[in-house]
Image (cartoon, rainbow, N blue to C red; front, side, top):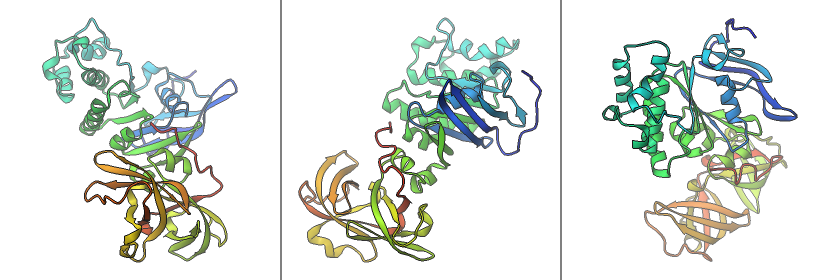
Length: 384
């Protein structure tokens, strides 16, 4: 092994080129190229076993890649051991030293490097994570969220080029996890260090990350901002894993430069050509998708009030669940069974109950199209 630096292609704090990992005959990570822009919050999102943690461990140097190269900035670190890489890692088990107080836990990395004057740096770091008044407490005297912030402070005080986070919020309860999502994003924004975060939780990734790589079976299914991935999924896996999608099997009736007209279950639907990743030849098959919160629900008696130009599908409510901010309906229709609709609880129509005939309608611009050769159920049941 060598420890010589070489020049990486420009463009990011972390760059993986042709990286892969095999364990015997099992391909944990298939060859991939990935660039993490400098100073961003980047998430590797996927279900258990998708390869996200293995990818993170190859960046950290805790796993040797089977093929490919790991660059940190302009330096090839593929053959460097973990302690010689400019990264620090925060794990789900925060691994704080129980016999040391919070001050000494945070100071540990500096003292290990022989730095004796640590008061200013430790104080600044404790203030950053809003634990300035807890310096002399022991880890067991802190809540899980506070311990998580100590672990982040201990990692950041070393001024790493990249901070790696492996499911750091997994041990927290839901309310605290949501608070810590905002805290981690605030800290990353303030310090400007590149964060690479592994998680199986879609809400967590979408709340914090500037860019998300959705992983499945050792490969990146799609890479983009949270908004891009949610609004324009390119595969059924991403459509189903990142939130919920209604996918309808349709046949193409015609297409022009701007729009596509399809038919599904006798219902005529339209969608923007730019939101369809499938071939659009007349007679071809397309999976048409729409998110549940994009759909409005109108009782069949008021069908004439639905504005012209909207996509319309008749149906019958088979289930309704009140969850506070919204009511979630399940509707069977000629276009598909089990279509989901999320209606905000503002002015509830008391007639919208199981057994009621309804019209589902939505803006055609909120519709996307995917290739019908894909598994329509891919990604279902894998979401957190």
